[in-house]
Length: 86
Image 1 (cartoon, rainbow, N blue to C red):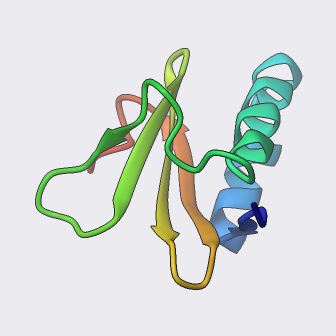
Image 2 (cartoon, one colour):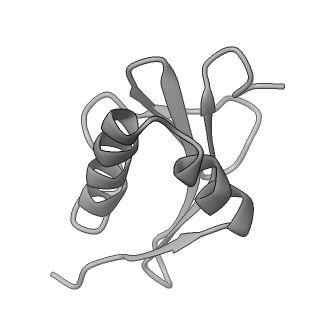
């Protein structure tokens, strides 16, 4: 099966780079794993939004969309849980 392509919004890249190094590595590992399985166990589809998902990494949330036809996972942002849904 063909892998999904991962794209990051420029704001998501900045958010990842501003995280503490230990969290940054965990986030990067999870995002990279979305290539093979874009909806892993523990992923939640956000209500009221089409094809928008959330994955939890400790106190941080990765919000992303999945386009199955084009096989693209687009990471919109990575934020602390207190700011992820604003």
